[in-house]
Image (cartoon, rainbow, N blue to C red):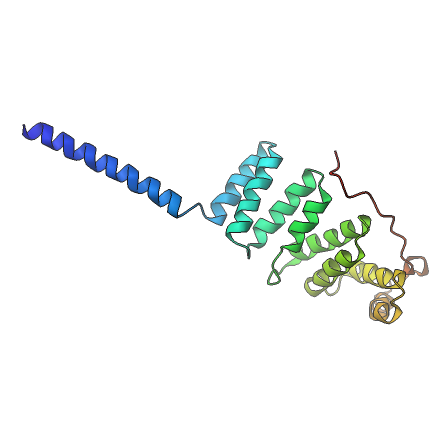
Length: 187
């Protein structure tokens, strides 16, 4: 009789442990880091839509995660959806720093220009300029953008920066981007 009582206790403890584990899993969902690891695994398998969905969940879980926003933007790019890519780039936290983030914001500015979204391009270039203040390409693009919008006074500091950096070319002082169709994902 004592033997069956011990077996019953063990089975009860195992059942309780499994129930506690399941409750803990539902109450404490995976961390942002573990979600990003799952997203990277999905990406490595070529499952870009799944990777984007997991990265989106990570970004919802932690809205201040620079890595989640950068990864989601990268997946949207790989899926050929420039609108989603720009949306995820917009979610990069203001506290983000580093040249990687600055370069990603610069790329987003270029994409916004190609999509005919000048105000988004300005937003991304201004943020990139905070992180990469010596990047002459950002100064060139902002100067051209402002000239294209007849905002000459605003273009002046950027054009002076190009002159100071010996990178000013008169041909580049006008806005000449041709908008692309960004309403549908690229295939």
